Image (cartoon, rainbow, N blue to C red):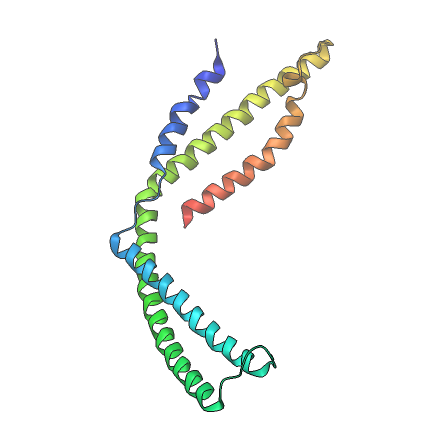
Length: 183
């Protein structure tokens, strides 16, 4: 009898969770707000970069390039400062809208996946418990075999070591799962 297959019908569980645990598709408003925010951020960085480049170019003596006349430089910098101010406002407004929609999406994703995530955690804990129990059985056989002077394969002879190695990992994973279910 294959006891392992009885304990771990893992293929069907893994397939279920692989298909169930997918982020829901964001709304069209969310995608639009994200695109607008990214564009506003890129535009702002470009304007700031242009302004800073212009300032630096004017301080460097480059015989191959003529400097802008002071009046033109000041007018250009003033125009860029106005453009930067407008871009900062646009970037701030799009960020606020995007962050609000992202919070709604985040809450929706957590709510829609929460039950499946808890189920996955319970299943992982169950399987970890099963593995620890099976290693305990193998470790018991190791003790009996040692007393009788019989040597078994690595699975049996190394079971106590494997259990000591897996226990802290299993405890850490269990804490991680219980921490996730509280939030």
